[in-house]
Image (cartoon, rainbow, N blue to C red; front, side):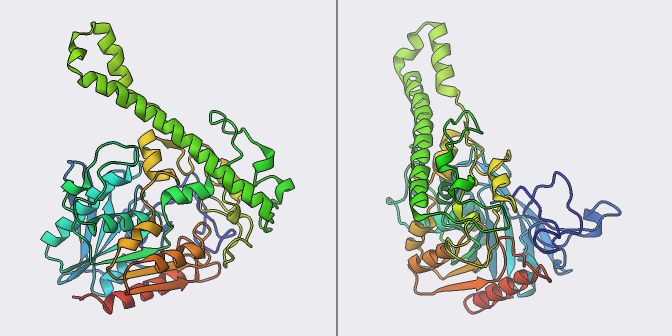
Length: 456
């Protein structure tokens, strides 16, 4: 997941000396060269640390890939020479072309592939089933490049995506999925999905849909009015227990029970709207395929074609309303009040451009619907029998300890490890040195890899 806000030194450790304006937190994770930074500016990174640079002898190869469904994706292959194992980073939309763990992996003798899938920086039409073909293209390419072992590393939303791929790759035809969550034909049995040799989940949630469901604001009463609100279901209503940050809120069990049920109800309504749009298009596409379509008057054919072709976007307001952001007694951890989108969760819930803001009906059902998406890491990891490492940051604002524990417990393999590192979702500490969690997390990762996979 990508956050739309950068914390300055007064908010969460000294991540930046000055908070730039209009800055989107992106995936660039290691030090930039002077040539990559405007003159007179200090190089900074927003998901990682500018303290850690690639080894000087690193070769960076831009790779263009075509999946079996003809979709295009790309990535950057980092190598120093002689590596036998490559670690592959993916994410549904943020991409990880410059993963912050790359310098440590390269120093340790592993190659790195930072992928940018077909939906790089464009979540709106994201269909998870299609993204599996992109990962397959990556694995096929890296096998052709001679790597003996390939390990998928899913950071944040990349965790459930990578787990989804590995689960389907481990499923033998004809038992793979044959359609998308929207019901569109997409037969994974016809694709070459070579399994990877291991799976690492870093600060990973259990699925974008399930994450979205936990964040869906149930107090919305009118999907066409982003400010509509039922105060009895508003977690940001002081009468329901909300307190001004940095104070922790306190919600009753009765409120939370009603709240979670209302979140499911809103998701059901959004799913129904999405399916209505999909079914309408499908109905008129079927008419276009009927032999009698050619005999209809021209104006009727034009109208049917429009109805079969056009769609509408789902605009989903306020997907930043998980009570755990404000009430620290919910699944306690070392986190502070705040969300992935803003230190003040109330602001994060209301500003334009949050999670799932604008989605195609197909993208909503496949990616952000907690009731329809198949990218459910808790279920998919039950099919993963390769080695699994789960790394969880204890102060993660958006991904709570129970998620890491559940994924570790559900993994089918006997070779599974669970590691906790003190830090927030972006591997930042609340005290100096801010980037200490990056070092610790990288050390845990490298140690685990070296015990199982060959190095250069």
